Image 1 (spheres, helix red, strand yellow):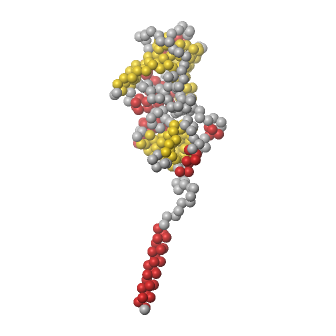
Image 2 (cartoon, one colour; image 1 turned 135 degrees about the horizontal axis):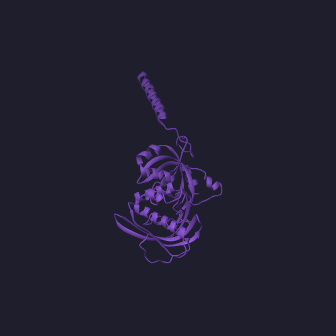
Amino acid sequence: MKSERRAHIVSLLFLAVFCILAAGSMDTPTPTGTDASPARGPAQNVSAERLFLDYQRNEVSADSMYKGRTLAVTGTVSSINKDFTDSVYLMLETSNEFMGVHANLRGSEVSKASTLSKGSTVTVVCEGNGMIVGSPMLTDCVIQPNQQQEHGVENQQVQGSNLSADGSEAPQESTPVPAENSNPPAVQPAPASPTRTEYQGETASDNVDAEVSGALDNWAKAYESNDPTLIANCYADQVDRYFLRQNVTNTFVHDYMEAWFKDHDSRVTMFRIKDVVFQNETATTVQLRLAKEVVTTNSKGAAERLTPSQLSLKKVAGEWKITSERDFK
């Protein structure tokens, strides 16, 4: 009898120990409706375009600046998507239409994502997660209030945008510029000329005509040099419009062209300016309508394109600089 009672007591003790160990091994449940992500420190502000360009220049250096850090990334939404696990992510536009910034959202941000639209300007606070196949990666992203929309400015074109005014994406181009979905006044073809710049009219004064002609020839030569620095030097310090982007600097032009040459592995072998018509002219400003005949080559061969364009120039410290450039389909 005593041995049976002792065995019963030992069994109860083993059962009690097992229950205590099992209870201690259980995870503390996460309250529903909250994120389990740890609190973040102060965020480092960076644009989607700057993040992209830094990774294109040097992935190792960019990782040291961004990977594992809290980032507040501002950019233009090119798409709102779900991956194969139904997780929601945003793609933010860059100067490369094929490679954007990939921002994976927290689960709590799905309702906010549903209110966004293509072309919206957004700021997301995320953790940097390196680069995959040319695209900077962001994880655990939280959408911040859109300051531009709060001030009544919604879906406007901003630096880094690759959308046309009607919201459609610019198509892939064989030349290093995006084209718009509108047409300028018709440009009549002019006879071929051995010079890079061909004029249609006599509307410009002799001095302005000669000076602007020289500036355009230098611009064409800069493109044929394939040197982003020489190309950027043809633009004013502040550029009112650069294709679909507004209020950029000539540094942006340099970075854009540097990224384009690298990403497309192409060279400009001919850049000729044709059919130049002066539309508005003063002693220090001029607006032109023209056509750009551009030939680019890469490992797949050569591509030629004739693009109607509108150009504005301003005389700065005795030199004519481009202040606006628009291409049309």
